[in-house]
Image (cartoon, rainbow, N blue to C red; front, side):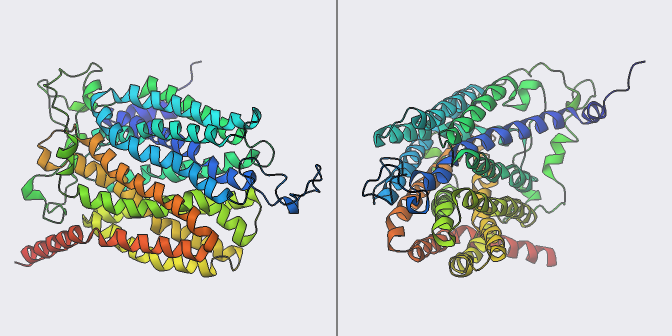
Length: 505
């Protein structure tokens, strides 16, 4: 007797064809960028093991005079270990920031599937090579610096590629919410990276890098076999990237109540046989004339690119300082062990997931991407101050404040790097040319990556003077990020006022 068709297969068959491919693209790019962040996180977990408090361990078996540092891993066994950790962070982040500006240009001109999967395999290789330094007993600083630089360069293949793929499949209608949920890959990757690295951090820290390296390379191979870059490649209808002028007010709020995404994905244009585009064949559509990729300067001239790029510089400075230094801060201030501090630091990323979703939902409803970012940044400043002063007064307080700070810090960062980048990369001034997505995304994230490099560097330089000063630096960066969006916020507020005036009239 033959069994009935599996429920999951019946569900897939019931979904429109476009929805199936959109779902595949969303899930696949989610796991791709999860693995990118998963492979970046181990360094922050392993820092406390490269220079632990040796006096708290068993007696020194070598009986030398350096009793407090005998268990540290050279060259991080000196008093300048924080500066060396900062150098490791910046080797990656500076290479990433420089490479990102070039990466978007390549991403517009190369097949995204090859570009993304190749970058993931190479990233896995360099991540694993860093960990092999443990098993090969390497103590030369230059080796770890070179691995970080190489990894930073190849990791720039990720973000422009995944945002371009998702932007090609999803229109503007619910982009904030969809990308807010999708962008949780950043926090999920950080959480998984912390947990995986924590398994081996105290026994064989090299595996904390090798295992994530294997994971990202394996996901890259899966991406090579299954990623679909454009809806037209499988005969599906492209989304509507911007609304008609009579259906959108100056603030970005639709006035007819319809979701523009639905116009193409659900009611797709009818073909000559009367069938909707969701029933289109597997073969790609006849290729139209390929639009020319936008130049770097042309992308900079798109309204809003400069403001959001500079805002992200300071927002990412705060986020990446937490990414690289939070576990060590918890060890030093709350006196937890390396594994416990790594586990507790994941709560900041849990808050980041909630903040990204919340920011996307609110910005979709109001149409005010910049205003949403500004409000969250304003609220983040006092919360950072409170976390530093009362956040360690009990495990319950620490958990609550880490989640809240994570939501307020990472919410604007997530919104700018996803929905805002996709909006600007398909801006109406481009007249339908979607060849700007990777370049705009790379400019915005590349500028933000300058802040990501500065944050850990400044934390390494300032932390010897006290953690209070590190938090004052973070609060100042948060305020500057908000101020840089003032012009865009004013424009959005004027748009809302004009819309309300027309509605009353």
